[in-house]
Image (cartoon, rainbow, N blue to C red; front, side, top):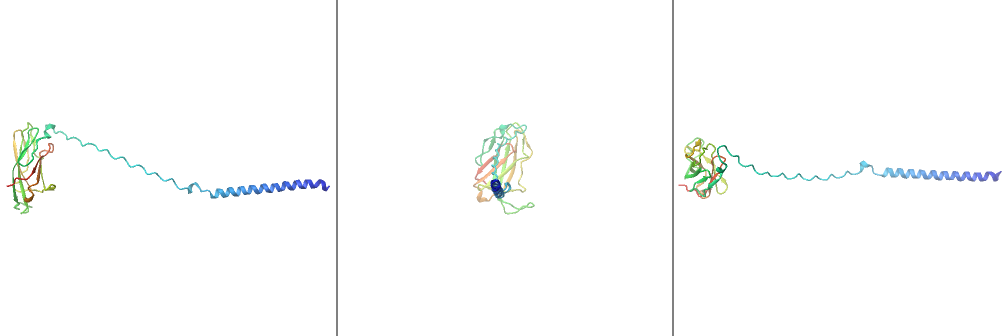
Length: 214
């Protein structure tokens, strides 16, 4: 009887031992898998990719300035100065025949007679004359006269009883006169630039150099 039972017991014991060995191996694999799962970084923990800086916007293209619009009744060629005065002695003439010149200049000090005037300021007075040698009227209501001395100092305009601005309409063949004055020190009269913009359309006439002031 023992001889029959003993082999069976041995086989059963071996099978039982093999079962425990296999069971232990499965537990180790589950433990190591869980450890690997717990130590692996989560997707949310990973640093976000750095955003690449965008390229700067392209530089704006500079468009050419629009051409000067032609005024009704004034040809485009009239803007050009055919004779540009180099000093205060010569007239400046536009291509349509219109011209401007400085007919006189004098140096004085303000008297302070008018309201708001201050006496004793240096005052350079310019007498101007515009001649319309073109075949069209010239609107003188938009004339602008400016003076600069010492290279870049803007001279302040002065107004008194003697100053008279250009105004009205100058017919073909006609002549108009005006008087403008500026606060220019007497010791600065050797370097003065006087510009006369007749109508905002023609190129301004420019007189420069020493002012022949009396």
